[in-house]
Image (cartoon, rainbow over all chains, first blue to last red):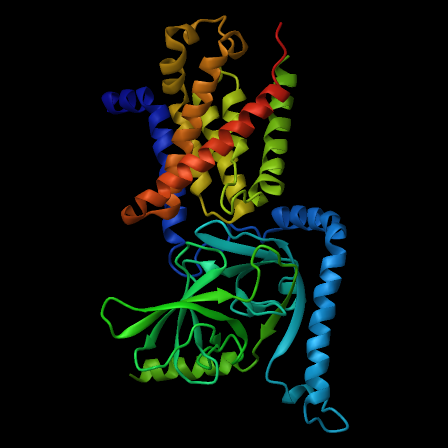
Length: 272
Length: 169
C-alpha cells in the first residue's frame, strides 16, 4: 500500500497528464458516433453570444454584398413566379404546406477542417430542431446537428460525417453525397450505377429519399467522374454552387411529416 | 505582486482565446492555414509555477478553443501534451541553466527563444493534426498541414512576442 501511494506521489504529474489526455481522447472518439457530442460545441450561449456580437459588428462591412445576393435571389424567384401558371389567388392555407421555412444568419463559418460545423443565430426558442435541413439561395449547406436555446450548430456538407441523398437532375439515379476533405469547393457523389449516362456539367440535386431535404434542391455540377475500383459505379466530383467561404443568410427547412415518416420506417424495422 | 501575476495570466488567457477564435480561426490563408497563436500562452507562462496547475490550465485553454471551433477535444489533447512536455523541451533548449532561481526567458538568446517556441509548436501541431486526420494513408496531408500551419504559427507568434515582449529589468 505504502509503495502504491509513493508511486502515485512520484508520478502524479504524469498521471494527471495521462488522465487529461484520456479524457480529451474519449471526447474525440465518442463523437465519431452520430449525435453524441451534444454538450461541447459552439452552439452554447457563451461562444454563441460572442460570435453573435462579433457578427453584429462585422455585418456592416458586407451589407452591400448581402443586398446584392438577396436582390439576385428575389429576381430569380420573381421570374419563376411570373412565368409559372399560378391561379389568381394563391393558397395561403398553412396546413397544405409540405415544408416550412425559417431564416437565419451564419455567425461562425468554417471550411478548412476535416469536420466543419457552421453556427447560426437561431435555436430551439425559434423552433430549430435537430436534423432540419439548412440551405442557401444557391444550394444545400448542411443539417442541424445540435441546438441550444438561441443558437444551432450545423454539420456542413464539408464534413467527413456528412452523408446526403442526391441524384442527377431529371433522373432518378441517386447516390450518396460525401466529402473527401481535399477541396472546399468540391464534394463527392458515390454509388451512381455504371449504366447511367453522365456528362461533365450535369446538375446534381437532392434526392427524394431524404426526409430532411425536399427533392430537387440544387447542389452543384459534375466536374469530373471516374469508375470506382470495383468498376460497378461512378465516383463523381461535384463542383458546388455555393461559395462555402462566403455565406451569410440561410434558410432552415422543417418537414412536419418527417416524424411520421420516421415512425413508419421504425415500425418496418421492428417488424422485421 | 502575486495578484498582478494572476491578473496578467487571466487577461492573457482571455485575449489569446478571443484573438484565436475571432481572428485567426477564420484567416484560412491559402485556404487552410489557420495559425494557432494561443500556444503563446504556454510560451509566456511563468516557469517556476506548480506543474499540475500548469497542465490543468493547458487543458482548460485547449478545451475553451475546442468549444469555440467545434473540434471536440483535439486542441485540448494537443495543448495538455505540450504543457506536459514543456519542462523537457526547456531542458533541451536552455540546458541545465533553466533550473536556476535567476533564470528568465528574457535573458536567453534570441535563437534559444525561437527554438523553444518552434519545438512547442511542432509538438502541438503534430499531435493536433494526427488526431484530426487520424489515418495513416494521409501521412503526407498531415505533414503538409503540420509544416505550413506550423510556419504560419511560428511567424505570427514571433511577431506577437516581439510586440508584447516582457520588459527587461
